[in-house]
Length: 370
Picture 1 (cartoon, one colour):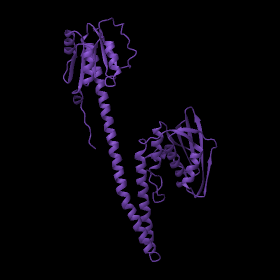
Picture 2: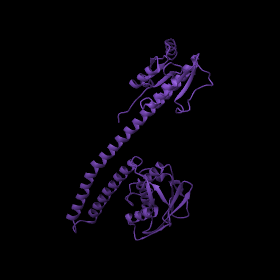
Picture 3: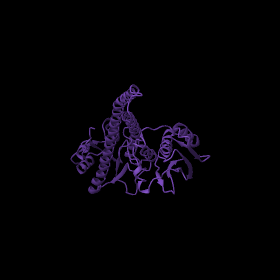
């Protein structure tokens, strides 16, 4: 990744201040007070001239005299706020009226205007200009950080795609070769050869699951869909039908689960991973998985409980770490990504997922906005 390095000195090279006053002596005084290395001071002798400059050049701060002929400072500010290019430029009004008479400033966005009063206090003038300059630096750094993050995400997406694409093809070839060898040796291979071929195919399957898990994990939180009413009972039944659990498993799903206004695919993935975990990590070929919900203010808390082997409390947080599993991968061909995906999806909604201590089995909870 090409790292974006931005120093304070680099940022201030482009910091431009427009000083507006109809009297030249006032312009020169203000320029002398606020002049500083890195600042570009531009002077305008009227409101109309200030508008022309602001529309033709990049301006980061305006010191605007209120009492001017033809167009006063408030009129000029109103016109600046009407133009998309200048509507967010901070303004410091310079006024000769009483400090108790600040004019119609309530119509301006809070934090974008301030006042200086004549005769100017040099320390106050320098401080207020410096404050807006610091805000400018902070906002610029924030913007660059966002650009750096977006660049990193884009490059990670490209990396995941390339790895997934370039690795899947040889994996399919290996799987096909193993199958052809198995067919060619049918009835003639010894037990060890048969076991090794089976082991090879299982490792290929594990890598395929791992690639799918990594790809899915990398996409969580960056792909958004429109919200729609989601019937949770129908959604859970669809998950169960799709997973096709062993015939010995029963599901006790609470009737009349709430209908949520949600991104359906994300909620589907959460239930799919959690229900699938309850089945594949069960120590028997039969069991019971129950799904309930409790409505709490603006959220719904879902509880998925099974009668499997359970999880010891000191592993409750560990299991949400990516690639972490509590059983050998030779026993279950799992990627170790499922619960990490669940956690990432749930937290992207501003909610949480956690395990509860129960007498037997496993109980996992997660909250979801209504």
